[in-house]
Image 1: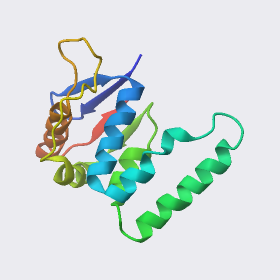
Image 2: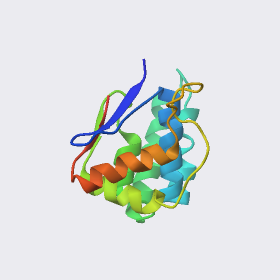
Image 3: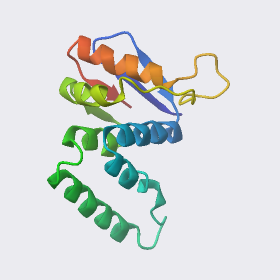
Image 4: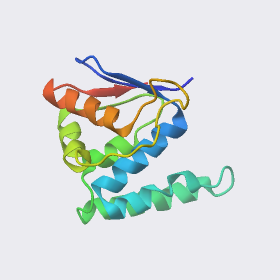
Length: 141
């Protein structure tokens, strides 16, 4: 079981696992703001049981500080911090993200490795662009 990302009006749909979705969002965070990217990179370092709540309180305080200093756009933070299980960003958020990721590419497989349709970063950029072109939301579940 994994995550499907899809344009509400388009034809592109991407499937990946939860770990790959985290790596994709870490890359988006880094490309949109180096400082937020470094902060967001720690999201999966939280203790599993004891101290978890305190860890995320500190994480949220730091996120708020970065937002106040306008180091990162709130639309990017919204994309990165929504639930893995179900989320949505509007067309304006897609535009904000796209302006930071449009010139980036890599050869990392964000989808299911070994499958011929493995998701690459270019595929994600195409999905974001499709949302912009169709003025529609990006959704995932």
